[in-house]
Amino acid sequence: MKYEKALQNLHTNGYLAMPVSPKINLVHEINRLRKEKNVVILAHYYQVPEIQDIADFVGDSLALAQAAARTQADMILFAGVHFMAETAKILNPNKKVLLPDLLAGCSLAESAPKDQFEAFKAKHPDHIVVSYVNTSAEIKALTDIVCTSSNAEKIINSIPKNKPIIFAPDKNLGSYLIKKTGRDMLLWDGACEVHEEFSLEKILELKKEYPEAKIIAHPESRDYILDIADYIGSTSGLLNYVQSNKAKSFIIATESGILHKMKQVAPDKILIPAPPINDGSGCACTECPYMKRNSLEKIYLALQYELPEIKIEEDLRQKALVSIQRMLDLS
Ligand code: 13P
Ligand code: SF4
Image (cartoon, rainbow, N blue to C red):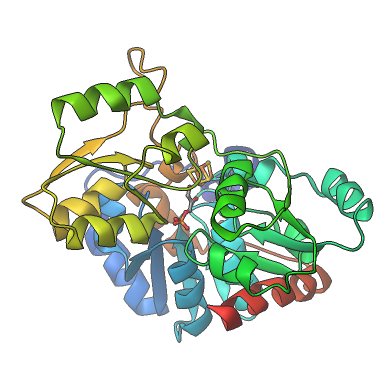
């Protein structure tokens, strides 16, 4: 397909759907282009191993937002999902921010549509709005303070006790935070389609097989998974726990992409991905289908043509920046 045709279809496909010659050494070409154009490649832990391995920086959503805020590069290529690249753009209005596939969305972010959330907020005008970073720029603009799973507890605790709180959009993280902080928060009814899938029954079966194993979980998981977890934390929290804990085996309830880094930092440990409820043939339920839309081919095309680019209207950007900046200042 010619470039012009690919360009016309960009928004339908989400990416520049052009054939890439199998003769091309993708890693070599990506390295050439990133150097030539002074691009920083930021990748989330849920990216496929070959993307994590070429990234300048791999991290959880807080660390990635912090890396985006301090980068000196001329351009950012975000190997993650849309809300992450959008946050990078909000922090860097004068830099090009590329997302290899615009359809790399997030079920949590989609669970909070702007109009419905605005109406909900209007019913509770005295509430402080805390939103998880997994939201659109429109929701961030309606938010007082953004948080991630790394700093959510600290952010909630920073709010005066007499102030009522709305927490959106993840009801599982919200319920967990209510238990941790003792704050009575109003929760939006959203969830992550990947973290909701872990099977309690199958995890308990694994625990019988590996009685010494520590069960570790991301707080987007359901309460019955969090109730049996030895440790609950963000992706980098889980990674640090596996690296520093004396246990030899771990049952890991989060997206399986994190296992790549875990194997690198703790090569001698037994890492067991928590099974999903429905693991019928061909199901990759513990993989985020949005994170997995990115590929080396798409990164190469994005760097070459500087597309797809994240664009955000300036008025919206400035409004969304306020709640992100408050989070960064508190972190
Ligand atoms: P982290 O902030 O822990 O990286 O989580 C991001 C995410 O999307 C989890 O599903
Ligand atoms: Fe969104 Fe869940 Fe994917 Fe994270 S794992 S990006 S919360 S859908």
